[in-house]
Image (tube, rainbow, N blue to C red):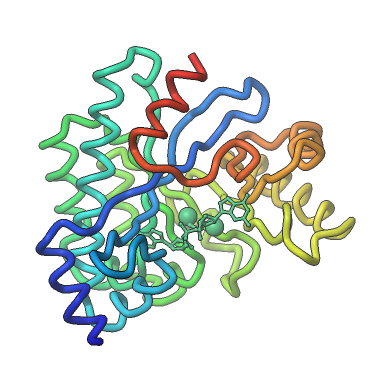
Length: 256
Ligand code: G
Ligand code: G
Ligand code: MN
Ligand code: NA
């Protein structure tokens, strides 16, 4: 089986789809937005998770058309929800962006085009990048981030605390949110020290004017600690796993 040819065909046959995981305000418990996570609905293999094909897509360059699909579909879907329900009017959608998408030109123009086409407010789109994206070609990435900032799009650092980047980028680059990696919240080795790291990340974010999102929140006691530590938002299985668009809409309806 040739996964690469398969994936190339999948893009043409519309076999990729998005699942959505809610991001919740820690104080109010309300859904503030969703992270879009791509899946491949393979005719023989069923629903293929991204860990099985994103690395291949990155190696082969297929991440470029795949990434464009994810951005446009996520924005279109969020705009639909916003128009369908007044309660959804201010929700945002978060999209993961790989290194290759930044390196190759065209990301910012594509984002601008999708926002114009769908009518989604720029501030309702958040792009999630890892520290390694920032470090890869720091100067070029900084330029692209500044152009995204000028559009009004928000930037989140994903898996924060696990990378090897210098912290100086936090004040040099137009970053809006830190997403604390789930290993500090619900990982096998999360302990008292992890709790201290979480508090430090929140303090760091506060001093820089950034919003903090805790990932991997699975249990009430983890949420209680985050609320006590004044964390802004939380995401994790406690609220919901990533679900398909119909189930995501139901989560919104239930929450109203
Ligand atoms: O949804 P799941 O828990 O299986 O996601 C696994 C990983 O796949 C996550 O770390 C996420 O960053 C990555 N991922 C999911 N969707 C996308 C996407 O649309 N683009 C990129 N680049 N990565 C994604
Ligand atoms: O790398 P990124 O943060 O984009 O990855 C999101 C991934 O985290 C998805 O694969 C999603 O299924 C997974 N995830 C989301 N919430 C939880 C959680 O509460 N616990 C665990 N173990 N994984 C989670
Ligand atoms: Mn993410
Ligand atoms: Na993450």
